[in-house]
Length: 137
Image 1 (cartoon, helix red, strand yellow):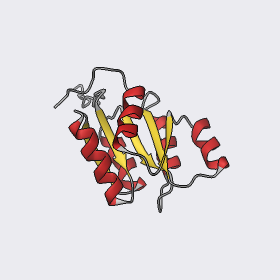
Image 2 (cartoon, helix red, strand yellow):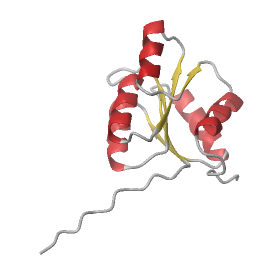
Image 3 (cartoon, rainbow, N blue to C red):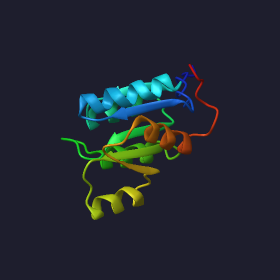
Image 4 (spheres, one colour):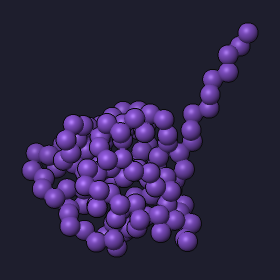
């Protein structure tokens, strides 16, 4: 008897995972991206983000660098290890030169410095994801 393997979820170019331990930043990013037509999921920490990345497919992860437990850098590295084509934006209010170098070497597509405004966030996402994938609402 042949076993049927469940289909791997196919990433939608408009699926975004936002990871930040600060609820206000996580909610702001999710609201801005949802209004721009992206399908957004959120995670309050790196552990939840890694769990979501094993169950669901995303085109982009936006993650705070500094979080308790699994850091944004670790989320980046784990995401790239299992989904090499995934795009990643890291956000930080304070990043050491070593941390920023590691982020770039690990494959971060962009680093946004807090505070950033909604237009800067959208510009970064639109620069990274192929155009025309999010439907305007």
